[in-house]
Image (cartoon, rainbow, N blue to C red; front, side, top):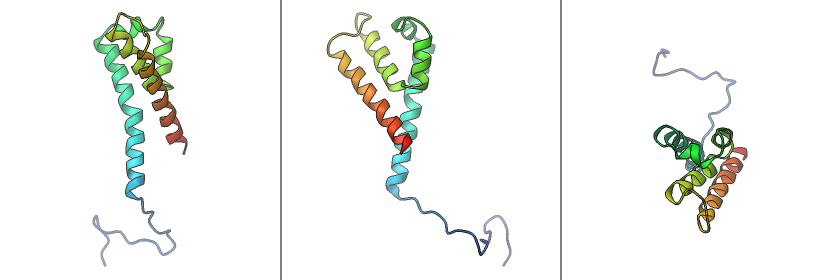
Amino acid sequence: MSEGIMYMARHADAPPPVRISGGKVMELTVLVSSMFWPRLFILGFWIFSKDLGEAFSSWVIPALGFVIAPWTTVAYAFMWAITSHSVNGAEWVVVGVGVLFDLSTWLGAAG
C-alpha cells in the first residue's frame, strides 16, 4: 500500500488513538471561551472607552485583572460605567458573579 498525504500507516508499537468524548470537547470549549471573551471585552473597554481607566485608580489593577481575574474586572468596569461612576448596592452582586466565573474558570483549568 502506498503512503501519501491521505494515509500514513501506524507503527506496530504505537499506542492506540485517544478518544475524546463530546462532553470533554464541550468542557474544553467553554473553558477556552471563558478565558478569551472577558479579555476581549477588557481590550474593548480600553480602546473604545475611557471608563476602564476612570473606574480604577491606576493601570495596575486592570492589567492584573486582565491576567488573573478578567470576569471580575469586566463586571466592575461595566457596573461602574453604567451608573453614576461608582459601584453601589445590587451592582456588587454582578461583581460577585464575576468573581464566581473567575473561580470556576481557574478551577476548570486546574482540573
